[in-house]
Amino acid sequence: MRKAAIFILIGILLSVGFAFAQQKFYGTVKSMPEQGYVGQWNIDGKTVNVTKDTKIKEKHGKLAVGAYVEIEGVTFEGKFIASELETEKKK
Image (cartoon, rainbow, N blue to C red):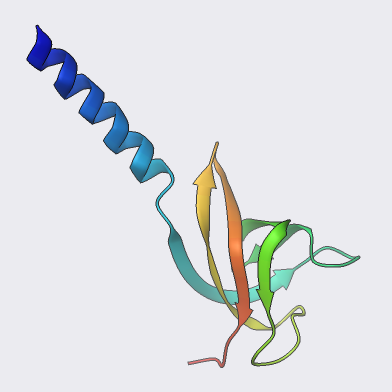
């Protein structure tokens, strides 16, 4: 009984850990909020939520529609929340 409870607890902890695993992808900005950067972005058809806590880096140009970007973040409750959004040189 005790071993079963431990295995269940480990399974729960692992699934929670995977749910919050950091993810990274690259793409082209298709749309962004009209005012500022906070809000929903469309990057190659994926909805990316940018918050006031998202780290913005414009090292390789201004963030704008058409910019190529690197996005890092997590999926929480079915929404991708960006922790970092950075312009990149297109590869």
